[in-house]
Image 1 (cartoon, rainbow, N blue to C red):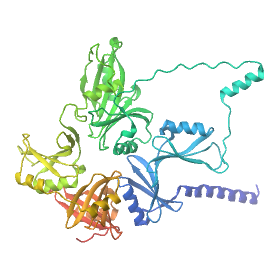
Image 2 (tube, rainbow, N blue to C red):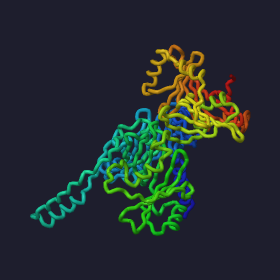
Image 3 (tube, one colour):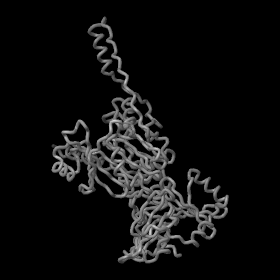
Length: 585
């Protein structure tokens, strides 16, 4: 090989390597978080306050934040002016609704899905985005499709000159073959399809259109790729139940009327049964067959497993034994077979029979089945700030022992908080607050209500009257919000409400002008400079209880952090500029 040949080969090799190296720019150029404009990072926190940031990139002159929300990876696109453009979350093809893949197979034969994601933008809040193209290299521009969350086509864009190469079906090929071999042969008669019997519709089956908007949003967020969802709710039920196929597995999930997730039950086959549960069944129920088993994930962290088994000699009678296991696989409850009466009504189930008993028997602390309250234990960090402030001011020296989000027949949905001093034989008190943290009533440890006549009289008399200009300004700015908690501080009227799953506070002056807008954010979404200042000045003894991003009338952004002393429960309010500089009070 000559020198020139070697030199030319070396140049070609360098060009090939360069092509591969610089082709990475198609995925964006990585950017240091400190180099991202403040208004861009503020928009990310405002639109997705609960998302965890991984990295920043620049793609097509847009800042792209790679985030994780609810364990799903996504990309948030924001322009240099801080205007949110688009968000895409991962949505594998295998997890798309069946109606979408059926549409693609029908409309785009010999095509494949090159990209699929669950997207959000300012015009369409939630939809599926797909790119489809012919298989192979150099096949041209892809077609783009948008579907709503129910799988209905919203938008279709095909590239210029788009055509579909039609292919003959198997029936057409067979017909042409018959004609070629015997032109005079008659066409075979089509077989008549037997008319299928119409299935009975369960009484408790409800349409998706009748679901509260908050329930829809939570379901879509947690189960983006769920297939064939069916919703159920009895007349006296307080929970909404959905039965669907999620990640190729039969799944049942429940939500309360406020859209809060309560429980998920995922079917488990014999092969993927939890090892300790499987071992227990092998050792103690050798003469039994496993009918079904499921994994239980609950909001109150009381996770576990359930299994239904049938003794082989009684399998025709279907006498089922149900076993409940805790999260470690330890057995803690057994339900022996029930012998049903012959005249018992069998058509009363709103979901599969195999799930009915589970919902009737082990939901004492979730569904309101005969008990006065439905309890869901929560951590003290999940309580509204007003609750902690009330405890600190009215019960000094005590600490919060337990806290629950419950539904009471008289008070509705409330927070129940038990406070008690440290030491032996200390009196415990149960306090009740509404969803905004306003105190309602209290009980001592004997169950007797503690009545303070002066406080009761004061609360019954004082009722905040919001001036009409403020109410009109609020309705014009937030027409979809029907429930808000109002407060007045030195002439400033503040509304607290939930907007698009974000806790929001807006302050107005007496003329209805907006003074500030605050969005609650995760403490870890505070800038590193702010967190470093808090660690240095307040140490490990204090922790950030609440954090807010505040946009004031001067269009400047500030961050507020509420610190709580772990020993004394004393709270400290701090405010910082967007660059992380402490604002002196």
